[in-house]
Image (tube, rainbow, N blue to C red; front, side, top):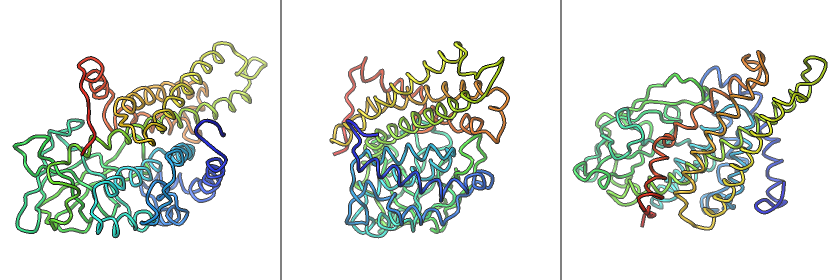
Length: 388
């Protein structure tokens, strides 16, 4: 697939990635889905192949490639039919590592970003709290400066890679009286005394280790502050644009995977003397879904192109996640229905796809929150600015 956004080099990368995923990942997916733990060897293999470094500077072992290599990585990860595995990979690569690159000191980048690109360390991003949900500004976790250290107390929840990661990028209030203007970002090693994690039991994303994390008088050096003190909220908001676009891309990719699988199934499944792709009611519904998926995909590519050029695409990325995740849920729901009783069976991919897709309108900002953000921008004239 070449054209406006993809060239021959992109296509070669896609084919290489597909081959890698089919040989190295797919044979293990069912095991990881059952155990809820992705074995460590695959992280190193991803690192050895350079997949963690495609968006990062060569100085730290990356390849510094354009954003459409990231798009390809995200799309192909959805085709292994494990939202949990895909989430573990992109949460490490584009949530935790994004903060390392953007706000980490040179020492932090040399130690943690280089090891993350190599697949030797796994990261997670800890923002959501048990009582806060989508309300980032309402977080209760605190980081109190004491001499050359910060002491962190509080908890985080729904954290992807929250149990088995090596380091945590966390948001905490350094000046609680300032509300969202008093939030800072820190790096915490997993083995720091006072850090504990509890694995959560989920409807979908079964392969990933989603955790609730507690910080009990966790003492870290002041050098583990990421960026400037009290600028954390601005950093979080800035990176939300890429996170939401990522989730939009994930959504159009899993919808396309579901449609392609269902099209193949319908072309072989017979009823009343003909294959079921000959029945008008099913054909037309599938045509509608395919059109909706292509519209979302085309929009997401356009937003990715602008983000790669340096545009601050908060509104467009928010729209991407809102519409693409809704579309994906609707597509996969009907694809399961097209398979009839087989769609409900675990040996077919639609049951897992349905569960995994349902997190789309929740994680990274619920659809309700996204609609309010969009409303503030288009109705109230609010202008979100990048962190400076």
